[in-house]
Length: 186
View (cartoon, one colour):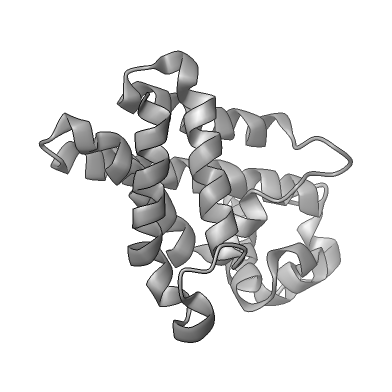
């Protein structure tokens, strides 16, 4: 691995840690540099801005989610359950990697995210479309799952996390995701 690649990997790992300790929207490049034990100026050797670092993190996160989804779908023998287990894997990943998930899917500079982040998101749309056997519906399926997961994680839909903590979200949120998946199948 080159020095450049090592530095980028170090900053991406630090971004994950910083976003876990602080709300992702409030994580600055200075916070990430501190978590990486670098000066803020050193970060610019690897990424031209916090936004480009978030784009690179989104590419990693989307790849990890696709891998997690493919893994659970491969283990599920009932093809009718594939979309539901994929949606649950998405929720499980988001709940277990909340800081990185939030940072990866935050709004970009201005109104647009970088091309790499957008293409990484398309990989999620493709996998949902492929699993459902409806490639043209992939973005709608992913959008529905992502929206519900985001609302659950932010507590906008309360499934008991206010009283019992975030650990209840994956199991209790699964019921809502199953309802969404069933409604999207028709």
